[in-house]
Image 1 (cartoon, rainbow, N blue to C red):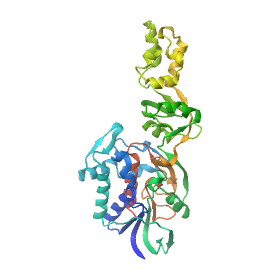
Image 2: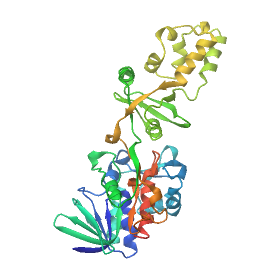
Image 3: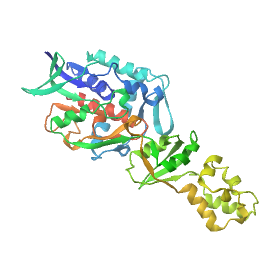
Image 4: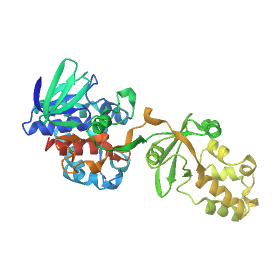
Length: 392
């Protein structure tokens, strides 16, 4: 039996941060992970550059059945706190659109920083280790891994969600919560590309590789960023963002020309008795292949001067209020995050501990807190891990 103060299940972003903070308090900490390397998701994120936080972060950038739950953690360990650690390690970084902060060189720099902090805090790491059973015996958690047994006072679950199973994602954290009677908000893939109905797929796949800036909305939620056509369906930042708000059966509304009043543009050209074809004017706004897919050939080669108000309005509607119903999403295979998870109402927003078992903590993606694309999910990992580390 190995006795320690804290065991953290998961060597990802939130688990490493929690271990650092608990270790700083003099707690004996062991991280256990079934993977062969710590921080795999950190390394592959942001195209290997790790979008580690966002300058413009607010609680409204998160989805949860309890939208207030994330506020405490995000206020107590902010993006500026994590950025101070990055700057202390002299890691080069840069800002992209919407306040997103990325490593200039490599995501390896962020992982090396976290591992270094763990070493300073005398954190022990056990990789390639899979826990078979967990029991509570005399107010201590007893974990079994083959012939090896561990006992600890505090157990922190930082096992992540179901996204990207090839990186080792499993439902273990949810199963553990259920073992101790903690409710789970149903999970689904978030920040994920859409697949299309067979007929739409055959049609839209002809645009594979084309990217355009667009406004995509569903219900009252809308995002504006790049939309990418793929051979499977729709992707790109704007699609990933809206996917977290979409439910099966809903129709997307797409504005392919967000900076132009097409009705006014076409009417203005008509007033000038412009003899150009409709497509000649529209090609100043949109790719030829997209226009050819969205508008009939007879419309594209009609003269602007001959267009009625009704036909101009129809053209504008087709291009700026395009209706498309996805068949579904690509699922956890390509999802960046998992929506849902351990019910926030069962946890303390101050400590991240379960109300029913105060020495059992849940942090990071396993919890029902999911951020937008753009560094928000990493900040939730840092913030929730930091909070649990103050108490575990």
